[in-house]
Length: 324
Image (cartoon, rainbow, N blue to C red; front, side, top):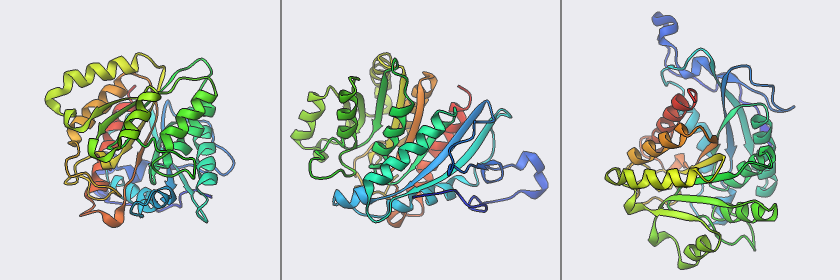
């Protein structure tokens, strides 16, 4: 279920005459094999990408399949980024976890083990999904690595709560209810803030579930730059309650004009600018532990628009996070 990234996977433009000044991500990224666990990070700032090649949860949720190809498309979109990182920062590619034979539950466990290995060896982790079922596997690793005295906060940029019942089976629509129940079982608090909720895409049952579990949210129409101060205040109040943050970015939160390549495109989704500004606020807190980007479906993308949006957000995340 796990494969390290093969040499040559990262490739892109080479400005041969520019020397070190022409360096790009594909020329600087280092490959990390997690087959036998993670080696200790050998840089002051070590940021590792890990792919989750899975859309079984999307299939179970009756969505449009194709997110299994998301990690490859994201790597391709990031490969030619110009290198502006400091000398004490290193980028790593830690390979991919695969879902085989529709065995989502086992794939999520394997993802959790890899995430745990990275976090306990002081890597800052970025998970490349995959459907939003990625989130539960990601959380399994976070839970293992989280000290008992630390409060976890979850910030989800998403058009949907993903708090559906998993009584019949888990899917891409259930991860945060699974996470909530796991935390409660461990006598921990479920601190959950969802940014970009579309009222028409969530039933009253889901709003009631969010309220029952103490989740908070901001509706998509309020996610505007002119409303930044109010959003910033809400974000600051949430972050003050927790010690570490797990951020999940579901690309279906963005307007379909910016992100057509998702399972459930949103005609009136949010603008990327407000997400970027809020991500900067989150990183500035110094509490960000780990992050994922999910629901990229390259088969449905237009001119790689969604992949480029996701990659560009990750570029800014890496640049700022490496300085915290």
